[in-house]
Length: 611
Image 1 (cartoon, one colour):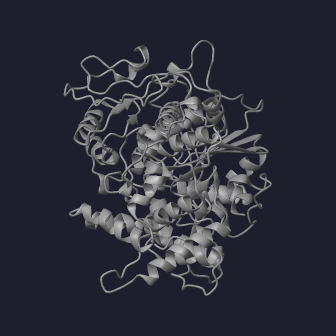
Image 2 (cartoon, rainbow, N blue to C red):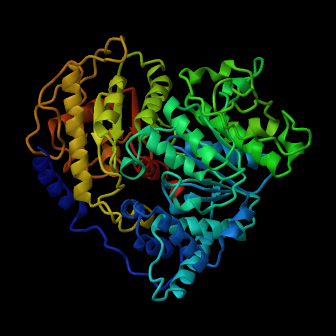
């Protein structure tokens, strides 16, 4: 089935690409503008190659950080220089980027000049390096890229012949930007893991944070929550306070042990309810109930930074007598019992009796903190884009726990809204997953949303991305990406068959109407399930995002052209579905499974982000 589908897709691609081929690694251009910088950056090992490099070097993990020291010094910095950045270092499996965004916005609300380093980017590489919440300009990116790149080139010798990988290079570049642009602080998001991540070259952060833990990057971090927690706890530093959100029992024990090994005072953040005294409800700029724990973590990180950097007049709330907060190291080895999720019932600031990790004190958020939480923006996470009758729901969830949170958010944001009087609402899933993620587990969680269509396509915006250096990826061929999409499509079909049309999560009956009964596929471009079922969600595969989005929108989104009348969309399921989409009063599209997928969709739906 996959091989047959690939043959059909290859034919469609040949027509769509009009003889074009994916570009190979570009040679360095003589000019030094932004696009030249990005093309040269792309000649370095990209993140996928970096993951393979990490796997190879796991036997000697210290070598990774030692190499990072060498690259940093060759670029003109010493690790001691990073101490001047007043860094907030944050790791975790899900929500670490959102927690960083909340933290940065809170501290910016105090009038501080903030730096923020994150990954991955959605549309343009320069999104990864921000000053005062905004990606650095193309001019600044070019300036610092060539500064770092040329220094590394000039310092090559027989003992140092290599260039740092893509992510390592950008990390070094971010440090140069933040130091030379004189930020008051830098919020630094860990790339992968913590212990051996290249950001862990930071030796003296002001405060550290650990967001919610889950299973991801198992080939590098390990296949259990405990192994992953060990990696995350690697960012703890002696005497530097660290905060984490409520975690499962065993991973929390590992974090506790790592904190004790490193003489790091570790605290659990109270839930956000504890900060909402009386009738006050804190408004968050990011939607979804799961963002509340990220906001609670951000409040602790921001307040601790303000106190430790001597900003007592700004920190507000609970005071420490004008002194540095007494961050005691809890040495109790008692196991953490179940039921930790009820911490909000406990008195704030109280050490948990018989437990090894104390609860951080609550305090009254200042006006600046309240404003920062409210003003936080973080593209591609629980983001809603209403475009006329088509509403796009974007969330880059890519782990089981984050997809669960995404489903809860989507059901509340979309499925609980009033349905059109004529019942003509169409729900579409646009999905892709990459790497070593368990696609079956992710797709199974999405079944309760009762999609009318499931659309699978690679993360490429167009069949050829040669003219868009920000979106180029030399580590994934189009054929490999399409094979993964076809496998995902088959998995979706199989899950529907196994469930037999029954929703195992909710008792609510399947809504009536609006479902297609397509004929079986015959090796065409768009593959559909072979037979109708009570719960039927025809699964279609497209070779790129532009074609997928045009089919979904059917010319009803002002940012998207109408699909071609002839060519790729020849299967009856696509044709009859197009009629349904054109006549629907409302089209609701959930885009999830990959941040790179969400980034490609944003590039097409909001062209201003590419400028």
